[in-house]
Amino acid sequence: GRADDLSRRAYDVLWRATEAGIAAAKPGATCRGLFQAMQTVIAEMDDQGGDVGRLGHGLGMQLTEWPSHAGFDGTVIEENMVLTLEPSLGYGDGKIMVHEENIVVRAGGAELLTTRAAPELPVI
Image (cartoon, rainbow, N blue to C red; front, side):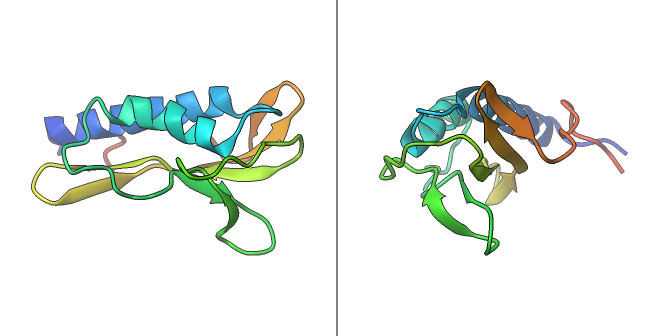
């Protein structure tokens, strides 16, 4: 089969939002900045308000921990922080899609800890 056009578009938006998050994840940036970088791309399509609250978080001793990539979190990103980037959006008739990559922040920017998802929605 094949994915419907709306799902393929949602995937594309989230893939590009993740790219924006990867590009923004540098020492000295803030979690709010990562959120804004990803949310700017998500806003191209999000028809359900995007009220997730955050688009990623710290990763370490617990699966979900401080800090939060959210508009309310001004935490400064430091070298060697391990973070998730989890942009999501609502689309269609009550559907939601989430994308996730795990990164470590290095002096020169983000290093992926996960194998980067394909740029087009895979059909299994």
